[in-house]
Amino acid sequence: MKSFVISKRDSGVRVDRFIEKTFDSLPKSLMYKEIRKKNIKVNKKRCTNDQRLNEGDLLELYLKDDVLKLKVRHLDFMKASDEIDIVYEDENIIIINKKVGILCHPDGKDYIDNLVARLKKYLYKKGEWSPDTSSFTPSLANRIDRNTGGLVIGAKNLEALKILNAKIKSREIEKYYLTVVYGKMPKSEETLTAFLTKDERQNLVKVTDNQVEGSKKIITKYKVLDYYDNASLLEIELLTGRTHQIRAHLAHIGHPLYGDGKYGREEGRYRQALYSYKLKFAFDDDNMLSYLSGRVFQAKDIKLLDDYKERKFK
Image 1 (tube, rainbow, N blue to C red):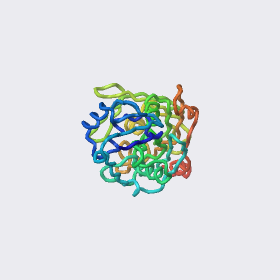
Image 2: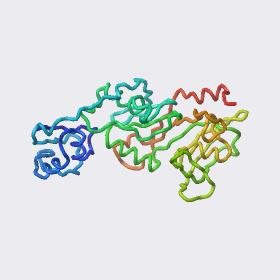
Image 3: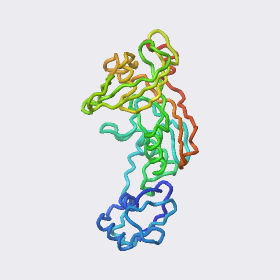
Image 4: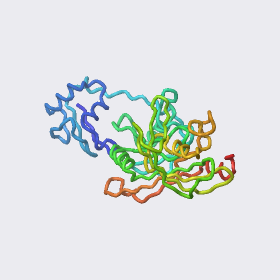
């Protein structure tokens, strides 16, 4: 027999999902059978496999020890770097300033050191999270490309992750970028509309003025902050969030980003002058994260701005 008191991190997880993530030797068929037989209970009462667990719930499994072997956890994230630039943190979320060159999630080449691994290591060393005691894994609610720096939001529990995902989708978390583009913009500020088609095989997008088959509408708002010689410093507000939207949309109107080897003028360079520097929380309902509504978070020590001030964009 084993029992667990559900933590805040696991609040909202289904009974069967919690059990699957916790035990290594309990077959699904047996788990569902034992739930039906009332040998798996929540708060001393019968439960269902899809029942959501709440913080403080008591989950009990009256089963033989040989099927209740805990999963062996591999702590690969402990090999990640300790470097993590925290802009804001509370019991539910964490906002990290990701540096240029770091992946948000692992890929085939960079499996160990990435932003989500650094987040796990940070919370593990603080004693706030452990894969041995929680079925929830700290997660990123948004992501930005390796060669774009800026603010990324991490969730410390399932409920926070659900809310963040929903609010990003509904544009109740507003995202602002800084970029430096070639040339002087035609207007001091403007809202651009076009259509974007994605080529998955080549990891490229194409922007057109008119809708074509497979294209999706994009809306990009810019404001000119400064201008010198042939370089314009812009603040971008993303009103839609498509792959490579800022880079491709501005290149489409004849003002590609400096350093952009994919959509710009500098073939082979992929350190595009783009930084996700500001987030605004504008929730219009009551939820667990409502205390963040009206808050604005901004990155500091942005190299792109330093380079612009030193007139390095030629």
